[in-house]
Length: 567
Image (cartoon, rainbow, N blue to C red):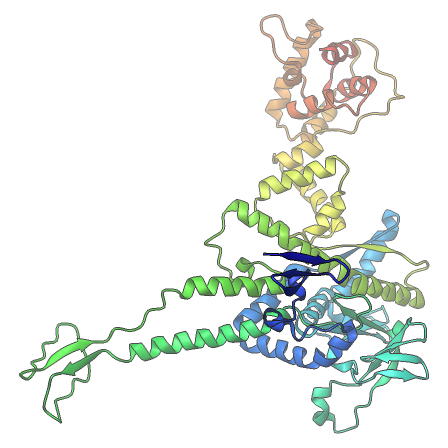
């Protein structure tokens, strides 16, 4: 068979028949499935499908359990407890700003409808984006009062209130699907309806759109193509398949219902009016006429239902950007390894929605509005910037993942405050609560490992401090010993043993005694064995700092500390 390649036209011939170099570009019978593929721009495609897709998406969320669950999974895993700000500045400054923010954002004072907090508004906004394509946020100036000293509220609007019929040139420039640009393509504002077009009959007045400057409104949606000005619902590529699958489920259910309606049949009777058998009971004996027989129904099976449903639901989950397990909440086919791989894969989608959508398009602009409102009302004197931290994805193995977090903090790859914010807690509040717990445990004389390691180890003295003279010990009076024992969570008995050990060490500079050898860290460990060893091997302390710490806090001589450091 002769093969001739025509490079200039990107064709080749096989047996005299002409073929394209790319099979995917074939326009013959195999390419008919792509007859709707056009070289249209992003906004032209959206213009012809926005309203229909938005209506169908909401219909699916109302009437299809899989669509409802998919949207729920996206919203909950993206927002979680809320994407929280981290003010940048000095400790006192950030504490004051965070206090103002918490009073405003953690109450319904921030909501125009006074129904939820700012983090609840984040969830509503993400739901509107996933289900309807986009969301609008209006800045509402209000009069400050005792309950809300910040003169600002946020009003959320569905994308329906952005007039998609506003298109073409006007005196301001060019409008596209309700979004106004100047002649050079820079964003100017939006054409908004005063109320939802679907509620027009309620108000009974004309609902003409009006121009609102971009400084007064936020428009958030997922940008999928360059130049895109409106958003589309998530999962649109699965709508047809999901609708057909819903019909298939209904048909399977109806088949089983019909099959279950027939229990038994009487055959072989010539009597036109046989005695009817109305019901069947356990142990019943029924005498039949001559020639009659009983046949039981054989309902059709649905043995292939699970395998078929599994493949369809996997495709639906992929269209929404989540896993099959998230969609169905069926984890029977998952082990730890596959679950972790799926988590890593799908987390990228959630991070994208968090940091490429909600933070730049919603959270950061709202923070700027909040700061402007505080400056205008005199609550702040200077502007304050903030970073944002999204909640962590739930851990599969808390022990291993917590160890990984600690390692990252020690390596300087993450901060303690950032790690705390990822859990949904406010660092300042946690530190304050932790401090109260430490003081409470010290007063009660309770020993907790995590607290012991932070309270028993004193701060290292400055390197400039001169060490005590050899053989000279600091004041070890009753009050001093009592304070040290309290900080190390030791009882009176432990203090007595410690003093005995000290007396033994006075006669032997090695601190090991004459009759038996005791590890110095145990013999002289006033602050606890673990704390003494941590101090002794800490590479961040100089030898002088270690000597001063041992002398001042552990009751050792300078000579004894030098010997231990050398060992």
